[in-house]
Length: 404
Figure 1 (cartoon, one colour):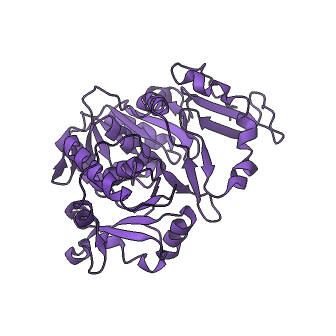
Figure 2 (cartoon, rainbow, N blue to C red):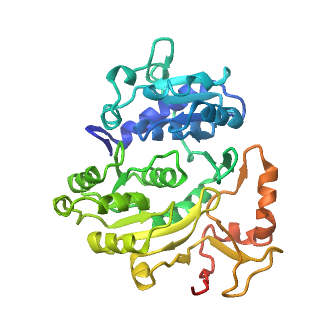
């Protein structure tokens, strides 16, 4: 079951919509390898279109809906997207920058999202002259099946320049199984368990994207928060008996700023596994959250390119405040000198890391960008274990840090 506001949809209902959407996307006859772009807030449609596009053989490009028109236009052109799916209220902010060859489908903005963002009702519907996706989709018979996992191109950047599209190779079933095996203990989402997963981070980001898609593959109960609000999060936890959440440190800070009487008003005892990343978390904030919610708050380190190779538990954080954790299954972490040779323990160096469970990647249209980073040279000769450990476990290493 997936729940957003007062809307509910079963996985059987979702599967039928995915099959119908897969047939509709296939009818577009996109160029070989051409992606579809999603400019959507967290909605049932994000899952529907991610899996439908994969079934139709098209990669998916999630676009940050905070971006301005020229930024959206750049991603559409750079990715080579030939179709764009967008919530109705987001159309105005970027319609002038949509390339002429991109076919645009508009989806109604759901009522709970409209309320959360203060969107006027008239802006939630498909404007005249634009293709309404639901109407278009429902004119097709469902495909016989859908298969595989989404092939996602995530645009990411450092502090300068245009964002780069991290494009992964399609993942075979054994690779998806290996990824789920590694991701399950990292995110705490496991098949066969009674779990209620709250999704409040935007799925255009790599971590909420992978977190949400894992929960979907495992058919967990998913609660979608339309927009993060600290007290509303507590209300959702109590109402739905939430067990699992992915968060970022800013959310912790906002929760801790709530008056004590509001924090005490809600029952959060259902929580079993909260994981956070994306930014450094101050030690005092982490300890305050663990004191409030209990030893259920865990942390990972990674990136869009690398996936998650490093993780630690709440107990480890309390035992060694400020720890970055340990290398997990499939993780590779190396600290090297400028010439690429390994540093000695305690010697400063540059950190290179990756998660071998995740399919390898290129920067879309920028092969030289990966080469400049020296990634291939550093992992060459060490990929030989990749296929071997898909069905087993590698030898784990611990990250060694110098004391400060």
